[in-house]
Length: 250
Image (tube, rainbow, N blue to C red; front, side, top):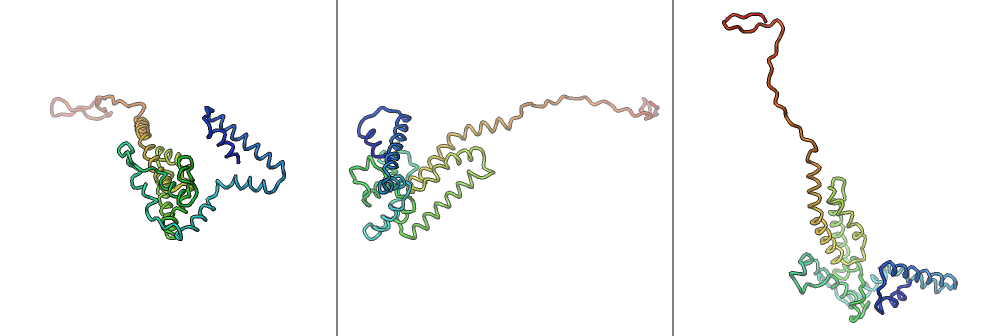
């Protein structure tokens, strides 16, 4: 609720405040906003306050805007919105002019009238994978794209989040869980980021897991075999061989 006030305090001028100070100011500004609205007992002000607070948690209005303009004004985009996924694993050091992951967001913001082109560097608005699939392929895209996302998540769950998965895979999978629930991201950010984070995490943690595994397998104490010379077994009453062919009792 105090978004505009917070931006005016910190975005419009240079500030050297730390993260803790900014978070404290955000909470204080929000508390003052709510106290002012509740003390006035104005239903319209309360409605506007609730609307502003919940608006960031809902993609319903953005989706309605997309369906209203597509394809009557904005044609279906096909694979254009997913172009970044084709080269997401190429390092930027090898491709200086590599497009950014925000290209799909920027197209949506400008084409659907969410943001002026001059403000793209300071404002980023995502439409979500469901609405993005409608922008790309219409109703068929919503079914096929979301089914594909479900298959990918099921594969990740089977590899990293099952009982039989190793400690390494479980650790990587659990660290990625917060990103899985961020469905408001667009496909290039969602799956592209998942692949990069998983690959980097495995590459960094694999040597540690291998060394730890070897230490667990190596026995702490090694048994040594002591050579034992065979001793003849004497049976009472048995006959021992003599120097000749005769047998004598022992």
